[in-house]
Length: 310
Image (cartoon, rainbow, N blue to C red; front, side, top):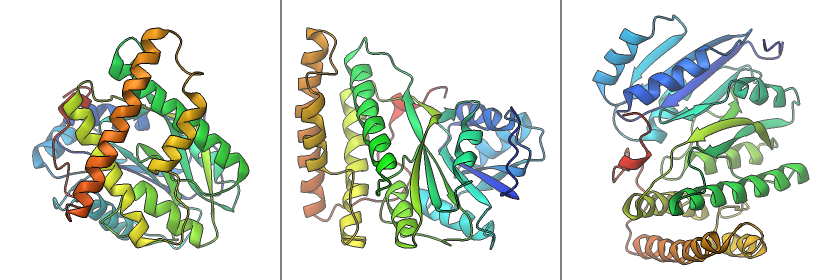
């Protein structure tokens, strides 16, 4: 399927990665294989020079570009590229994703189609776990992703504010030149667009496939870091609505506690998940209180089990 949207002249697909050459290679190739009629680039930014050498050896396509990350964090890398590829044309598009995930073949088409509406400023895709429901951590991933899917779909249909998924979302160029680095980019960027009068849209057919943690330490470390990144938003933009909060999780989770599990084993796993989420929120809030706030350095603690190929 060839995408024929006359609105956009240039699409910059930015893949932020962290020493995951094989997974990032797959992520790049999936984008390069999609039939896009507009001019586009796939830009990988990574702090490891050897990743750049590997990708340049494997990818012989002039649409691929590698940038060496200065090593000051994902937000810093994105801000540098926003400035490097800034356009005054708001119909140009940035697509943002990570090197350890990959998208569906129709992902770019679905994201760009949403921008036919000039009121849309941010479009988020649908994260899909690679794990099935047969293990506890696989079930946890499926439950959390299903809950996020239902919430985003409801809020998008109501045309109210909601936060995007950092695994895959797209924004108009020419609207912002940067964003604060001490908060998750998938939270603050939609807020900045919302303040400028743009709407957020959920493109549920634009799927992005995610490998999730398969052990307690990796799961705990990943979720605590995510919570801290989103909680900082209350300090930076206290006047704006929040979708990823402890109280929202409790409120929305109660409605699906008995609806989601298919058997007693899954019900038991779900009960464990509720206590696990309570625990990590307590730890995250405790660390924030001790001034151990969200740090945008590339992965304070490496999450090895989320690396799909490397």
